[in-house]
Amino acid sequence: PSDSSSALPYSFYDDLRLSQTAVFEPLVVSSSSSVDVDADTTGDSDAAAVDVQQHVGRNLHALQLEPDADGTENALEDLDSTPITLCHVPTFFRWSQSSSDAPGGYKDVSSEAYGGTAAALLAMHHFNNGIGTIAPDLAGIHTTCPIRLTMETVDSQSSGIKAVQELTRLVTRSPSDVRRPQPCAIMGSSWSGTTKKMGTVSGVYDLMQITPSASSVSLDNMGEYVSVCICDILL
Image (cartoon, rainbow, N blue to C red; front, side):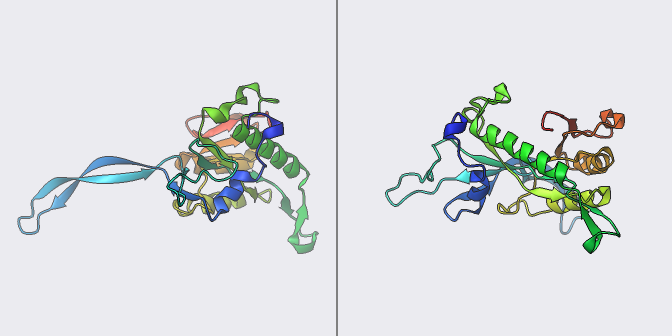
C-alpha cells in the first residue's frame, strides 16, 4: 500500500505478532570476544575466542516466512515479499492520577492521553504504509525500509516513579518474546518531570525516547539525557 485508500488496517502488524502462522525471530549479530580461560593444572591462563550474540535494536523481530506444502514461501495474506521486521514502540501518557477523593484512589485525566495516543497511532500507521499526506517524507518509505512499528499504551499515572517502574518492566522482558516484546524505542512522557526520570533509564539502555511536548531546558543536556528527542509534531 502507498496511500490511505489501500493501506493495511491500523492493527495489522500488532495482530501479526499474535498470528499462529507467522514466525518471528529476534535479530542478532555475532562477534568474537577474547576471554581468559584458566588451565586446570598449571594455573596459567590462555585467551580463548568465543562467539558472542547480541540482540539488535532492543529488540527487533524479523518475520520468518514458512514454506507452504508446495515448497513456496508463505508470504501471508496482504503481505508482499518484502522482508518484515517489527519494532515495538510503547507510548507513555497519563491516563489517571492519584487522588484521595476519587473512587479507587485515582481520577480520570485521560483527555490528553486519548489525543496523544491517537496521534502516535496515526503516525505509526502512516510510517507502516508509506502514507505522506501529513509528513511528505514518509511517502513510499515502506518500500525502502523493512521495519514496521507496533504499539502498546502505558499509563504513567502522572508519576515519574510509576513511569520508571513500567519502563523497567518493559526493558526486562525476554528478548525472545514476540508477543510481549521489549521496546526498540519509546514515546513519552508529555510532562518534563516524568520525561527526565524516564530519560535516565532510557539512556542506560541506549533506548531512543521521543517526547511530544516536554519542554524543560535541562533535557537539552545531551550528556545526561543521551537518548531523549523532543518532537512536538504529534500534539
